[in-house]
Length: 242
Image (cartoon, rainbow, N blue to C red; front, top):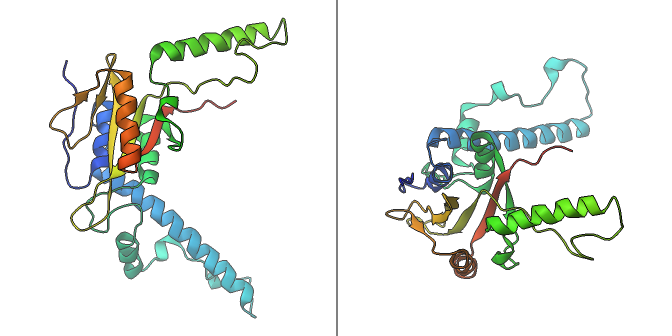
């Protein structure tokens, strides 16, 4: 079986992680640059608007003429400010080599994968992440029984005080410390099940590495949390509106 695996280029690990997770190219560097620029522009415009509102409340002169408004308009941004926004974008590397942050990754997951991400609290044991299909199915069966039982008697099939385990994620984005040249940086890579086997799809590897068991995955992730300050983003289908 052929497994799609992009190799590392510059600091484009977020792009590689998304494409490797989806097992095909679904986004490009230009796509992530556009998302990063949009996120930063939104922040800058909000800050400029807030500053303009604050300035107008302290002035002693007022005007009802819209042309006298001091609010910053997107099409009135000077070229120096545009350069400043590109250079000072906190969602990407100042070198233009990538190193996209979690905000860019989360937005890209929603746009190009049709899913959403949720931070896993790494203060908890990583074994709390459900990675086994059998466990996921048992949870669904217990919930179904609990729902049926609730119509006939007050006791719960899940047991007193028990909590349902979160469903198994589509995959996991791992973010670890990995300096780039003389700069501090973080590295993204994907872990995902493919045809019943979990793989480490890290773009810095020569080829994907299969995990022998779920226990091996837990040990691998827990060590990264302790040694490389790993952060874990769980990828799930979008929550349906109730």
